[in-house]
Length: 251
Image (cartoon, rainbow, N blue to C red; front, side, top):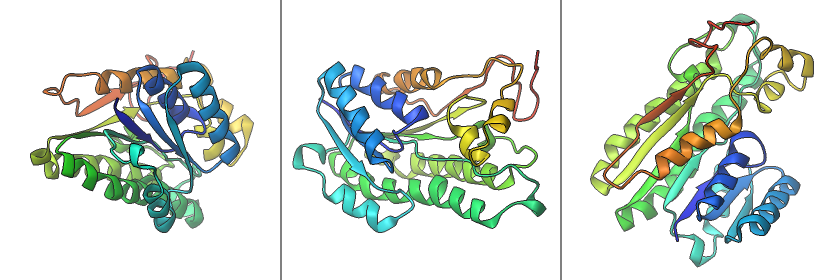
């Protein structure tokens, strides 16, 4: 049985990923900041799929918390075959000159530093076993920049650069590294970005049929079920009505 470690599972992509990997028969380590949601998801997974699961409640922005959480894993969960770096967010959507530095800190600490902290702790075990797979959840914002999103786009460009660098550095250790880069997906993403403003969040998807978390879970399933000789470097997914980061056909 393979073991998967998934960050940020208490909503959106992460929850869909955890459920999909459980369906595929993975033993799971799931992480998040909201203990009640974390435990509820774990209970749902056990009842539905009867797989072993370990919950870790911590914030990926805290390096010491990351280390303590991962070091606390029971022996049977220490051999991680798949790491899914999903924890991430957007905060704010203003022109650079009008935006909030606290939002910048939050995005960089979560999207970039959190990914680095967790990966740094898990990669040594993969190297020791000469096998493993890492999937980083990026965004089309890591490919193209759009108005009012400079810092978020920068954070996802960093994710893509880290992914490519890891692929090079870990090649000799038989570790596959890839990313998924979604376009417009309706989850809690825009609610968080607009600091809880439901009207602004809803307006993001007006006139289009956006992607959903299950669409992205389909992409993850495809990546992790390829044979060992196949590495999917990146999957970019947009709604049919979205051409790039800023051109959308709203009907």
